[in-house]
Length: 354
Image (cartoon, one colour):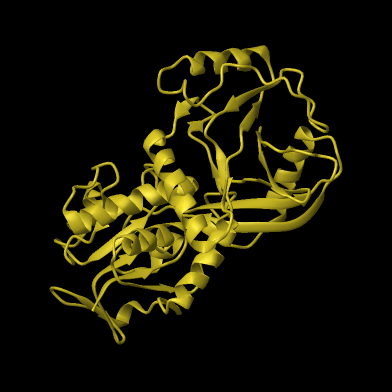
């Protein structure tokens, strides 16, 4: 009998799979590539919400784990995934500079916001008010991670490439069975696909469509991440990821002309050089109204679990949330009430009053 069946192999599914394997647990991962938000993500990690100068929830502990976790995966998979790059926020006024310095004095932000103005001049970016530097930032090559990890799972015979059929899941007291596979537990890490999951579809997963561009801009010569109305991430060979949009109505993975125009207009305001659009991506992020992950165990089926709702910060959240869920299942370490699905009172009560 397996220890875990894991449904989904985006950032959340990979993180849980890897933590289970590190703890000598046996797994089977089932995925059909219907969800692509992890694949097309900018992969940016940044400990500060720059709009309102506040620390990302539990940023310090998440960053520590992130560094360890992804460098372990780099060694295991033999690929480069984690690019630690400064993030420069462009200032548009003296007032913005002052707000930055006020924020960098706060005890919880001082380790993340440099107090030194960055006066570097970049080829194609006009910056009379200079930049502020966010420390401990970078980006993860999420598409490469997904491909390399899937390859690893296939090579170890731990992967089933198919759409999960919920009607075939049998739940017993001490195990679950799916087709001819038995496991002590099943973990659903399906991203926005969770809305089709009869066990967890009543959780308040909202979904926010995001679109980004991959551009080629030979004159840009950037080796840092620049953030303004859009972010620009250098990914090598004069290629840059530019994003991202937020659409709360459209729940499809289809790129739109409106988002393309929004991104190119904002990009033209930021850079003064020619660029060519190489790719245009779209995906639905698994966001939650209260901006906290959805982690925990089904109210009735105690061997059925969920790891979801990582939203726009999947790269930072995945290792931390997967660790929390694993420790909860295996070692009875309580989940932080902020992430535990028990906080969704009407979800829990729906199983007792239906």
